[in-house]
Length: 394
View (tube, rainbow, N blue to C red):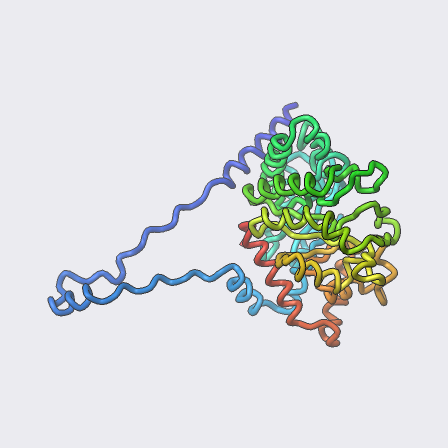
């Protein structure tokens, strides 16, 4: 018990410190006229129009300037949000200029709060550009942090269980508790909520979904995203274009033969609701399902047509990321294993993968060969940096 109490005391202290901010400095006296100035000069200064205040650059402008001063290797590295490796995690941050680390159960297991805080900080200390530090803490069956009793006394409940016991107030309160704990530990992105519409208990995704129709799921997503945005916790809407009743793509290819209209009147609604509530702090994760209504050949994650739909029909201008590129559903589509190149050509900004040590060199080779356009890499990197700015990392 002493160890657990000490761990939570460390979490509380760090969270309290992170809430502090510096007040803006007061304006200086530069430009005030001297008491010895001549009457004519004084009159002239008094009658002149005040100078227009400088307009601060937008996050987009700031990010574009940063990108213009980065090397190609640095820009490519920022597009990789990778599974934290079991070895060389600290050195790989700078060696590959990584955009972020995604931690799984093995990375949090048996760690005290202080252990995890120090580990994550060691990654950030090495990074030239602050890292996205992400985790899947959905509640229910997917809990990478609260599964460790040193970090929380019990696992976070599933969305369905929360709603059944306390409605949207319980959902909102639970989201806040997650954000507080994750922030204190050093996480800045929770890959949640699940925005898939699923009402059939036999669906693979049902246990992780809200379990109700599109409108109810939209209300749930709006509630979670709005709270995460207020807490400056990065959110990730998944799994676009909507998982439906498809099989698990970790182990094979899923082909979704539903009409585009069925997506428009149902599956797209929670994603649109999340966009409206996000205040620029959410990203979208694209699944590996084949959406035959738009592209009957490529998984959504690798399909330029699906990404064009997301950008042009749903008007999403934030970060788009792949589902894990190590999953079996995409393995067959990449020539010589260069699935990351295909994912970037499709329009993704962030690539989730464990194979970054192989994939990053292949992306650099594709740029040198001209099969990838550097302008598109720049645009993706700008969106990643703008997201980091929205989350207060830059």
